[in-house]
Length: 130
Image 1 (cartoon, rainbow, N blue to C red):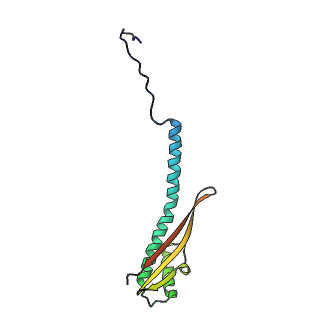
Image 2 (image 1 turned 120 degrees about the vertical axis):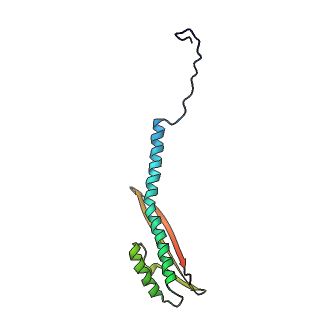
Image 3 (image 1 turned 180 degrees about the vertical axis):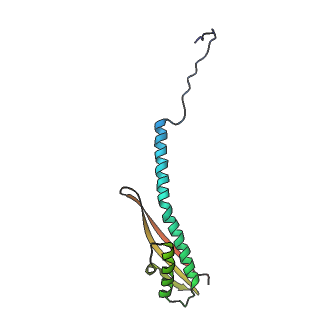
């Protein structure tokens, strides 16, 4: 091909690389959905870590001679402060080797969109340091 100046130029047709507008919109939608779902799950996980902290504090408060009703009542007081979804009656109390062990298992349902939701099965336990 000749240009206006009489020079001969070779025309290179390169294939374009990159993300098209439709591809970008699709990718942005997928990333937005994943981020939205992750943000919806954060409260369930923070609640679980708060429950573990409350269980550990309750276990450290008592010795092996403590009664189950007293341990559950102490847990109930702490549970109301952190607004936890489990009750003191749900706690399994074990006493072995001079230590108290507390365990609890519960489910948390997190609605995502419409009739779609995520179900988390949490199990928390704590052993006293005494």
